[in-house]
Image (tube, rainbow, N blue to C red):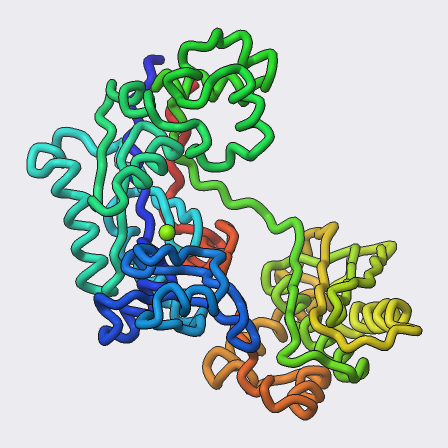
Length: 436
Ligand SMILES: [Mg+2]
């Protein structure tokens, strides 16, 4: 079977969080804007728009340094819930432009235009088609996006990087090698510092130089990945876009407390409230966990932590929270510093069958139904309409928890998919793999 030419479009929001702030407050348009903060405004910049970048402000710059570099600029505190909503709107638009959409991060996704044939291209060109998508996203969400079109997702992503400031770039079929020739290998996403250094040691800094290396050498050094890199550098990497929905392997939460907490009972309440939330989310995803870990970071950044493995996977708050409480008390015995951050993780996950059976309602099924109902009520009536004892106690301790702080949405692909189409994934059939 001869390989079909993939046409994969990558779309990426420009300085996404900063653009969201401008979309939410049009008065900021045209001004240098960055998003950042930290508890006391002493944190780092997590996104800066083009105007701010001109002043040398970028992700990772300290906020006070950003203000010094650009006194007329605007610091916005993050509004993650609003970013998520804008992201959702963007993906709902994208979904209408191709049979397969693969979300990649909160502001990035891939569309598969491979199956578009003459019927579509008779009336439009890739450039017009993509400009149409960009304009529609701009009109409906006020978000600027950049796009790249190429024969693989990897190359499309590089095309987008090259198109920043221009809006769209297509690498035409057959021109892949030319496009890559002078580009540094370090630009490829997910390459990693070690591999980059090993490739440099072979005398190759650009894809053009990699393409000239013997493919056997790359295979010996890096295995399959090396072969793929060689094919990629030679413009022959043909990977169809496939939407995979993988099961979760772990669930965790890492929370910096609203203020340094000297009261360990309050910190414990906070942790139990978080574990209740995680357990509920797991059950809604029809999962249960066997292993649990707790780590506590103090104000001087030292840490204590421990983990526990159950004989069988668990899904009940009462069972899980009892053990987490023991773990917490164990590691906190003899400590005296205030708590800055608490992390909990649940892993070694297994399926939880909450589906109805013919033989009466199971324990699992009842809990699943309860979680669904709680979630639904809280969505309708506000986040804290229904609370567990731990959550209620927490609210009592700390008024700032009335509106729980939203979490940074570095959402994995599986969660993005769930948000767009529900836990079951897209209703449309998935694209079959086109190669043998
Ligand atoms: Mg982006």
